[in-house]
Image (cartoon, rainbow, N blue to C red; front, side, top):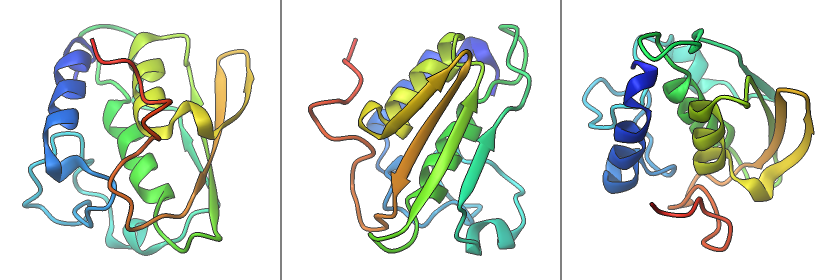
Length: 143
């Protein structure tokens, strides 16, 4: 997924039910969600994560692979588990458009607990049966 496709991938995720957070599709090769990271080991999907750090792929050029899939996958993995569990997700280089848009869309402003320089920290509650990433009041404005 190249950075130049950021907006197209965001539109795809918004219109495709296979990209909803309650879908247990990340470990299925048949998923229609283009944001899903492929070829992750099954143990990644089976683990309840305390912390996830998104700092790759490099994403520093329009032709470079971007972090859109990494942020999306972190958001889905962080929501797995019971409602009394949390996962901290840290996203680096949020001064860049792709990282900022995808963090707002999938990790959600209401979950942001800190920002320092180019690093944002989100605390995500486990909600494996949710149908939305963000509350309607804080969802990224549709453009």
